[in-house]
Length: 67
Image 1 (cartoon, rainbow, N blue to C red):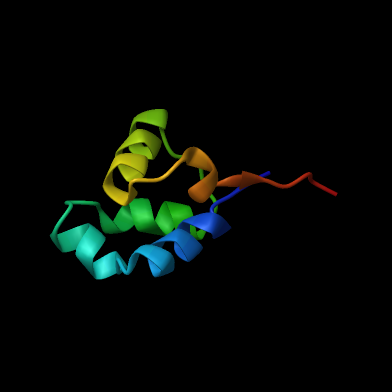
Image 2 (image 1 turned 180 degrees about the vertical axis):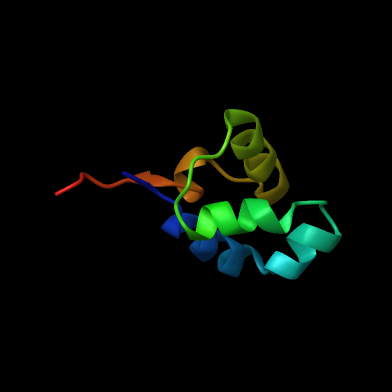
């Protein structure tokens, strides 16, 4: 299973709030909801997040083996 737990840790490290993602970078609330609930996102969105946060993919998501 893909989880976006590292995304929230990266936001905290970078000092960027979800409010700023929405209002400064134009991210949608529905995207943030998808991340919160570990739903799929496109690679283009992943690329945009990495660009905004100046980070790697592993700072946004990680793989956890399903039980």
